[in-house]
Length: 515
Ligand SMILES: [Zn+2]
Image 1 (cartoon, helix red, strand yellow):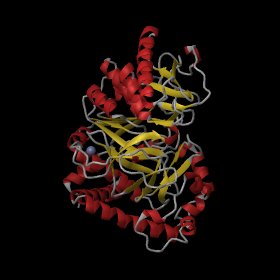
Image 2 (cartoon, protein in one colour):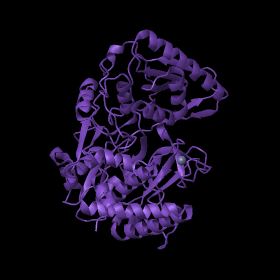
Image 3 (cartoon, rainbow, N blue to C red):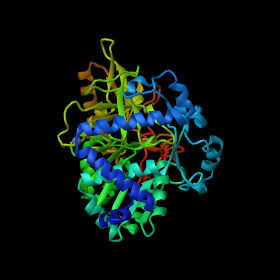
Image 4 (cartoon, rainbow, N blue to C red):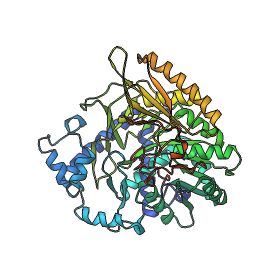
């Protein structure tokens, strides 16, 4: 029997067809009980699921069976297991998956056909790929059980934020949900979005392409009038500006941010601009819902379904409060393609203190991709690591700019690309940012840094289409000719070089619709 509440929830974009929503709802309550019961319950739930997943992987994935052959049969702690990489897993794709019907050759053919976007592979799996901005693309297969868990985790987040009612009310009263993301390929965002649209008859949900010139995009969103708006932080920042300027005339009940790191300051600005709560999600193609933002600016890990281990370059645990080299992800929800101690590549810091928001789930901050951590030589020869978030915060605050790019072009040289209209304003902003950066670097021991202005607009990542705010391009030269920029002065969002691959989650992060 469907309760009234579940019935209403099934109308949300969070829940798809009937079987899926039943599963989601069951997962929701399971997660709710575990979390209400506190840290011990969460830990024990996670460890139980971990042991079950490892056992399942050993039995059904030839690759894991091989990798774990010297590992004792009863594993309760992750440390006993080897670390896996995307490269190693993708190289043995057919041995990795636990359903022998899934074959790389036919999945490649399925993905090559863009008319299949959002369709079910083999009639039962949702498939998405990551664009591989950091190397090779990944292919990720999810079954209904995994999708139901992601759905439930999102419902938990909504419930935790006391938003379910408002959001549900908006959508239930014929409200509409808009996702502005990359369209036209099998990325997590659009695959799950289509799943939602097709499984919820009567649900007004639509995807919009980030490739659309901004003025046209605004016109389309205005015409659609969504109460639920989801996109990447950089896109939302642009939209927020448009709303403040009065050109974007929407009144969303909720804004969803994912796919890129959203700084706490930027989140507050979005909330002000849209006059509604902003939900900040940290997810990946490898696991759609890893963590959710809280009002204290931390991301709380869905620790009953996700295992996240911050580690150093040798995969040894990083102490709480310190920046990790990378993080190992275990997705406890996906059995079809087990992701166990997977090197995700993000540098994170785990909160050593209980979070001020009261959420018992472990809290982290994502410091960006490890290759984005800038290393400079100090005057005394030491190698100084600079947090991308620190650099971006300095520039944001000093120059009052939210769309920009910091490029390390030489050991102690940074170039700034600022998206600021007007030569005068740009110069003023640049001088302020350069001054603040030099001060900061001097404080770190880099006494003679060089900060220059690159006249080009920020350039989105060639493969992912995403804007990475801090990048390392040693040997790159500043341009004093703004015309060389691939972006038009009208600021069409993300029209970088060959951009149209918005991969899923900061790099593989899935901006999804809140499926
Ligand atoms: Zn918190």
